[in-house]
Length: 288
Image: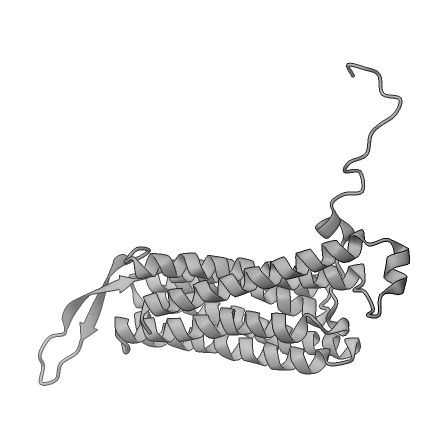
């Protein structure tokens, strides 16, 4: 898939996400400014503060993910964000002919790994909010989400088989940790929330885990074994990025955020600032 096409799709998704986010901000501002007497006369139930915070949580993170991906694909569309990587490939021959070495020059688009490094923890944070994960599980998933693309980049930059496959093993271990976290304790926590949350969490969690598995497979058949060329690699990355970020984000905003059971328990200062903000201190000496 052409990088320009993915850039346009990501940009359209970003504009849509910004529009949905602004709508949430406007609606929440209107309801929060209405007097209790007017709220009592409304025919519809006004959204609670917790529900408003949940919508802000999902919308803000989705917008940030799409913004990062839009910028990275703009770099790809303008032929930036890559370097030339040199790999020595050993070729064996029969009939007593000595082995030879072949030098392979290949474009390595490191901006893709940077994009994934920045967006994977944000996507996992959205899943954790939906499933109601415990704090330790959230931290573990975020760290694994950082390690996965980082070790993937180190593997792609490796000069020897030992370097390439050594870092690749670490990527696989990070993926297995995410697989366990999302589908075992994560699904258990989602079932406690009840309602439509377990079904949506299962669908989105399995969707994201399968896409991450596809990323790992694509890494193996591209820069590591050179089975797939640069064009095939670009198509695979484009499809996976759209599924992992754009499709997931839109499903989350349109299908999940309106569900009351999907409300995210957030510290008040994350949305409203610290309680001391805007207060004045009485009794302080002037000039102190």
